[in-house]
Length: 211
Image 1: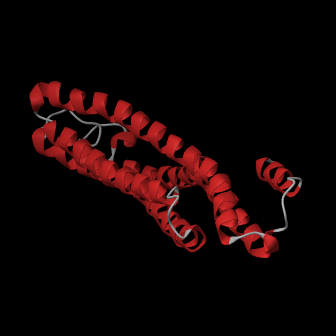
Image 2: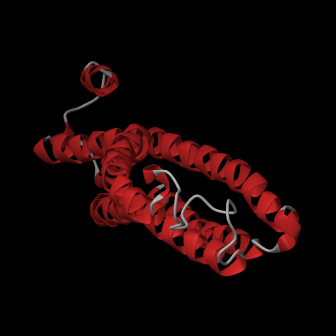
Image 3: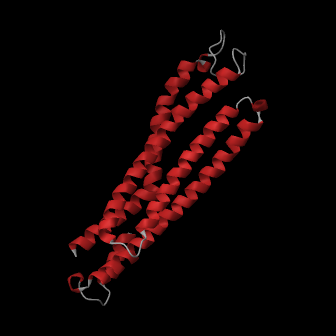
């Protein structure tokens, strides 16, 4: 809907056809129209980083301060994951900033940058999906090491007389549908924040090429 409105506004401007415009005019028009889309993605990226920091910080403090610090290893896992995500967000923000470069050869650069951004997003989807089972398994190993054979200390111990749902194999099987669900949730989430905007940029480049 938004892209159609942009197309209509562009075509109704009192300006010469694209074939009669100078390269500088085409460059300025493409920069103006793509700039708003990229700005939205950068705003989404900032909001996403704030949300992740606000979510991970309480978990990090909890595992550092509770259990007499015995589960600080889990806190360090969250810190490591937070650092990896921070690097990812930094690199993606640098890419989005480059996509707003006013002095670049915008058309060719933007095509390459969109492809790079799509790779970043694909990496983010898979990383966000796989980190669930990986964090779960590593956390379980840390808990088992810190609380060896302590009845009731951990849901995942295989103890005689414990309910079936506390068996480690049950939790391992449970991870499968959870991981699949997280994958599709990440797909929807990433499309909402970035995918639809990338499609607008691709449509814009295709339209400029046709004009």
